[in-house]
Structures are given as structure tokens and as C-alpha cells.
Length: 104
Image (tube, rainbow, N blue to C red):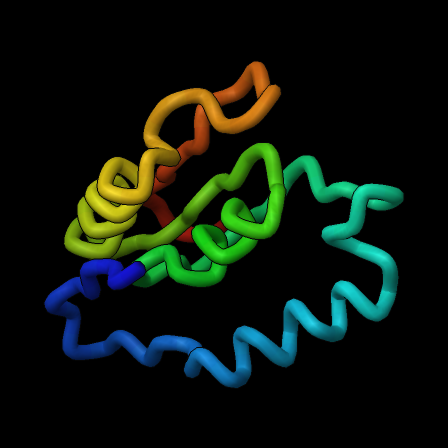
């Protein structure tokens, strides 16, 4: 599904084919499989949240999104809500989290 992008002029989103290559590599290492599920994902410099959202769609049970831009953080929250990940995800006891701060 389509997700919203922030208005930030400094945003450099990860291309879809690069994101697919990253997750293909992770699958080749056995991650995102029933034998090796991913429980947590940390999306630093989240932007629109596309990388963390992809991880959630592939079965991660929790994602923390971090970005310094208020616009990006608000966009991630809107994308989480529109995709149904704003509430508790899967069997997780923890909500997905958006942190509007420097990564340090």
C-alpha cells in the first residue's frame, strides 16, 4: 500500500529495490522466517518509516522509529495508523513507538 512521505527537503528515502535487497539478504541469513522470527526492529533516521513498516509487514512484532524532524515523526505516526500498526502489533505486549529525538 502507499504510504505518506514527509515534506522535508532533506529526506533521502531508501529505494524499493534496495529495501527488497536488504530484506532478501536478511531472509538468506534465516531472519524473518518461522524458525527465526524478528521481535524488535529499530528504524533510525526513520523519515516516512518505510523500512520499519516493511519489517512489521514481514512479521516483526515491534518497531521503534527515531527521527529528529517533527514532520517525519508525525508522518510515521500517520503511516502506522493508516496501515493498522498504531495499536498493539501481533502478539506483542508493546506498542510500536515513535521517538522524535536525535539518535544519540
